[in-house]
Amino acid sequence: MNERDSMTWDREAEAFDQEPDHGLLDAETRTAWRELLTEHLPDEPCDVVDLGCGTGTLSVLLAQSGRRVRGVDFSAEMLTRAAEKARQADVQIELTRADVFDPPLPAGTFDVVMSRHVLWALPDPALALRRWATLLRPGGRLILVEGHWSTGAGLTAEETEKLLSDLGGSISTRPLTDTVYWGRAIADERYLVMSTPAQARR
Image (cartoon, rainbow, N blue to C red; front, side, top):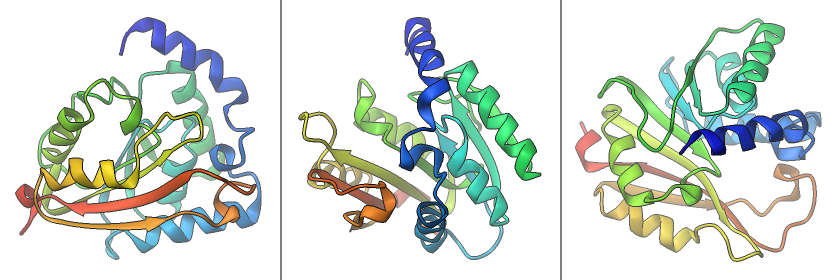
């Protein structure tokens, strides 16, 4: 990702949270996302990195649930808004400006690597996943929310599962068809997939 991309997302930041699944301004939608994510996280306090955290909505949800969270995004303006959300929610989130395609984070330091609607947009999703998997501790998991949209962009669940299968380990996929997640009916494919890569298995 280059500085031009960063500037594009800086411009998007002001209106970013207007999308129901971005800002989670509706209480029912917010609760649905909290329950979805915590269902797939370890029960005990753990370290989570939210790659492509945007304005920090999901990062704040996870911090409120007792997880230690680090958000990474290439947009300075997105991170400014994420920091303000964390302040208003009275939670601690470590924020890092970096390219999530190759995040400059220490290997083996997270229990969960999470991203939402990020993988599909990267230049080499397979390489990105290999890099992300190195960030996990033994027993760590990847949690990805992705989709294949009516425009033809994105990744199908089958494509994402194939990418993850190259890492070995377990894979489980949950379709996200309920309108509560998106604030409207959808006609495309959206899903959450969780994987424990072989190199992160205990």
